[in-house]
Length: 268
Image 1 (cartoon, one colour):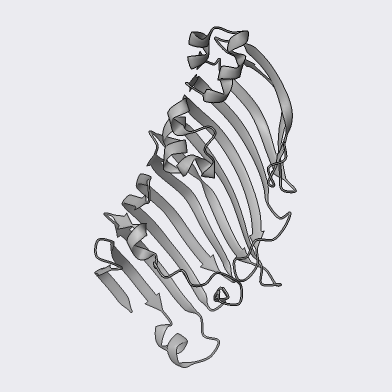
Image 2 (spheres, helix red, strand yellow):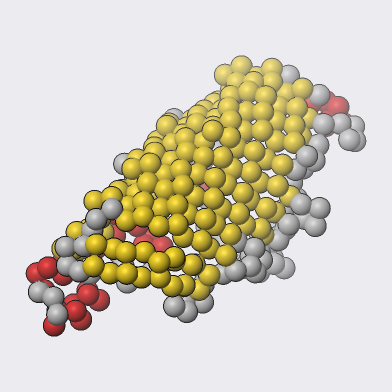
């Protein structure tokens, strides 16, 4: 079955266009163990994720949640191009990637999109294991990401101590991430691992209230706008703990040397 320039809406504003083919379609529909093969191109001018998500969030535990089982009788190869995509405060442009799927393994290769005044690129794989757990592995590169926009669009990562209004700077980073969830997408302890090679240029800390306690030793005017030299470090996340190796930070107010750990239960 060939599909030539098919367009459809997933909601009021989110529209998709498909051009491709379905092979073995009728055997897949009417016979057992007949794989469906899909190939083609998917594009969209705009996807608004908020309108696609259901507002009825009644599934609050694993008894109510729906079990996720990836199909093993579909083989797919798709090119995806999205001009604009928005979710809450997050927005990205010119997203493109190549997606392949086979044997419960989804590979998303050569991902590239523009966001937060910079570019993010990388690769992603999603696999359902024999024990039905779902494993996600990604490697990504962040190029010239605006740190203020990053904190704003991700709601300051759920904390209110250091907010987007306090920060300026440009992030360049390479990130490896691996995590595993149960078949109900429930969190599994100690499965997350990440290694972050981080570099921040032109960093500034503005009107950060906790620093006011240092005003006895440093002029308050200096503490209101602290400019940092280039900051580089390699941060590791494992066993529910963020490990920060020894690093030196040179700023307009003071020079600081730090190292330590921050656990997911907020023990520092």
